Length: 111
Image (tube, rainbow, N blue to C red; front, side, top):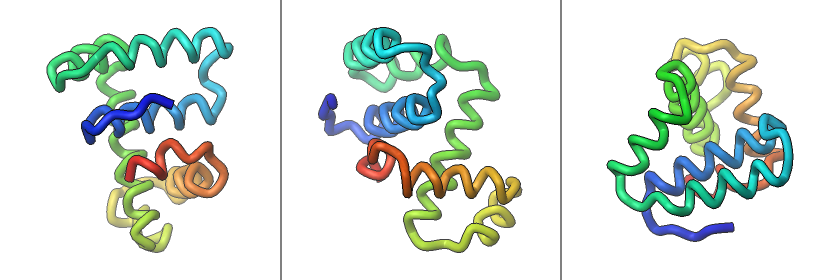
């Protein structure tokens, strides 16, 4: 796994790890290509451009929402409280909980 001190970079890599956990990537080759691309970007400006190119505005909003959910779960906030606070369904919060419990640890290590 690539190690970087930038919080924004770690956040994006955590989101990519979450996507990989849910098998959104078609193959290990695609994973490797994506990781290689992500490793090339260093500045916030480069990351912003990359995220805008890779994801639609709705996808970026969903990733941000998922990150908020996981952060609150990691702090011990009850699932129903998170759903109410963020105005999301309990199933979205439960999905975030599964990532923390059963994921590869990429998101958890970035918190």
